[in-house]
Structures are given as structure tokens and as C-alpha cells.
Length: 40
Image (tube, rainbow, N blue to C red; front, side, top):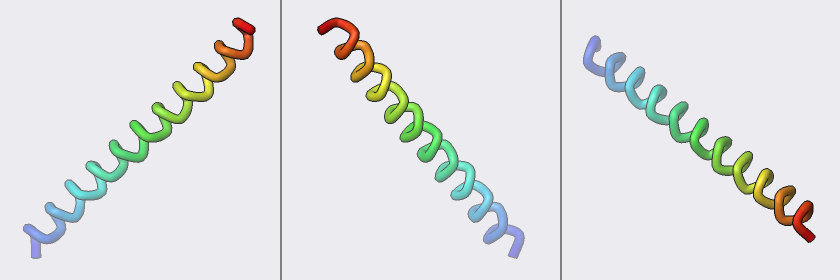
């Protein structure tokens, strides 16, 4: 039972990191779009 909880916690941490990196990528692409608009 302890092992299951441990794995679940690790999975949640991993998932949270993935979500964070996805958000970061989205923010970066938004900033790049704004930058391109400012250039033109």
C-alpha cells in the first residue's frame, strides 16, 4: 500500500512538472508572437 502511494505521489509530481513546462512553452510562444508583432 505504501508503494502505491509513493508511486502515485511521484506520478502527480511528474504530471505537475509537465503541466508547468507546457504553460511555460505557451507563455514563450505568446511572447514571441507579441515580439514579432512589435517588429512589424
